[in-house]
Length: 318
Length: 298
Picture: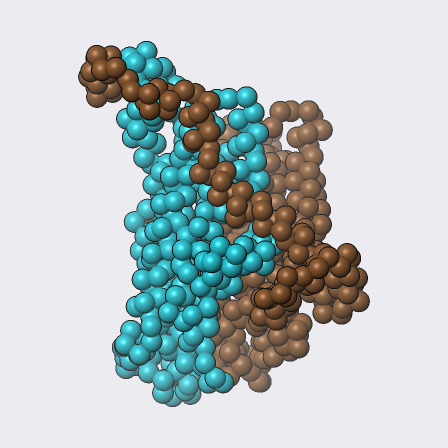
């Protein structure tokens, strides 16, 4: 503060140059401040988004400009069993993984909301899976799911004697699908738990005290206080989680690359396989664009479905 | 508060079953046991990664004679192989360069944008803020194919500069959003005082607002650094030559060779690639937690 008061007399004496005056002209300053951010977003986000939609209607390949082919790419996708398979697995993956993440994450948040020693250390440890690069932890999962040397198989077969032979996690379609979902849940729990924990801490303890005086059980306190109070934050976190689970790429690409026999392709990995690896940019873009309706629907559903209570009451958003 | 506590203890004395309800055993079963399971499961892959990277190959492939959960003769062979027989140091350098470059770029862009939206207040500024926020909801999986053609058009294909320029698309929305929240918490009166004293807008930003927003800048910075260190799909699609790859992409595409996976080297690479962000994280835990929760609450 003292710096500014000191510099102001000096400033008054000096005749401000035209450059200084220009930068103090508010409309100019606003444009200058917004230019870098909006410029970057326009060139590398809005333009590619439009270009992607355009590419989806062309037969562009790598190294050849395409011509407009109308809905041909989409018509082809509708007859392509692999695309339908990817749609099915994307929806299935998102549904099960989101449910798992939120059930376990909410539970973990409730546990962390208690008082116990080393709470902040524990909170820091819990966030670790979310911090570490996904591909690198996915590699660890790949090794954990190894057909021969899986540590889970070792535990179940040699230590606990529950099973007689090793589990083939990634060799056949359904075990592979569930193995990937488990890895996704593992990675998603921390984000959900820490976000919901922040929401839990904003709930006033006096509500619980009042409910306890009225004789509410622990379940009733959860059902009628915690859950409704958490709805707005649940809606936001769930919207984010659904969007980024549905468009997930890294985990599947690192662990199975869509195999065995293309059973674990998500739309994103299929788009990569066709568009970049296969060179069919137009078709890849069509697959990517086909994700948009699902995303819009999921966003509207999770946001308005969960935040329903709020906008029905006509409260302002905050 | 003391009243209710006193009443509570009186009640527990009167009714022994309520006391049992709150006893240590119940706490153990309902809190510590599930918490222990959570921590065990969340940390096990890292333990497994670490222990694999120091195990000799003979132990890795033989669970009968060695306890797989422990190392009987630790070795640095995998790490040595990684550092001297592969381009790993180079990949680390590229990743660091890309992460620092894109973090700097997006911090500058988003500080200016957040200042304009929150403090220079103009007609429609909330809508610009909303637009930037919505950009955060566009996932990279939709953008990477058209972006690849854009990158080729600009002649940036296979260059780390492409990543430095593209990463801000997901960093700027997050940072701007975080910083708008931070600027909001700085009293506007401070700026008014400076205006009355004749300071220009840029002086105000440099001398008053930015020094007060340092915690927010640190949060945004470490978040951007982590996100760009972890980014995968753009780096996979835009970089082709082995030398220019970032660590996550290089480990997956350069170290996974043939049918026999070198698990020791793979896990050592993953461990070394995770360490920088893990160390960074441990230094700034509180900033991470506050920015994560602050961003969600905004």
